[in-house]
Length: 84
Image 1 (cartoon, helix red, strand yellow):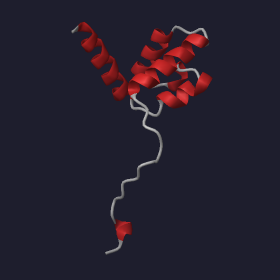
Image 2 (spheres, one colour):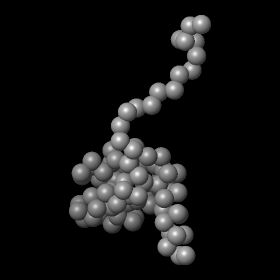
Image 3 (tube, helix red, strand yellow):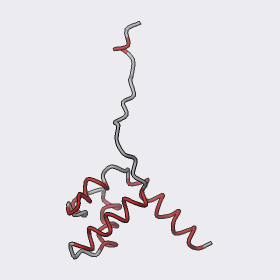
């Protein structure tokens, strides 16, 4: 059977960076550039527009490696665990 007529799954080889680490690195980059990291991250999470995130220290590329829902999951998980 010819495999060209089948849907194939492609996975890029690369590093899997935990959402927590991405958020910490992006937060630090935003602070270094003088932005309010909370406002910028909320803007990005609400709109999906990467211009809210600085390109300083590759923060914009880093945050785009994850889906927004993954970042939100990490934020909610961290918040609720902190409350326990």
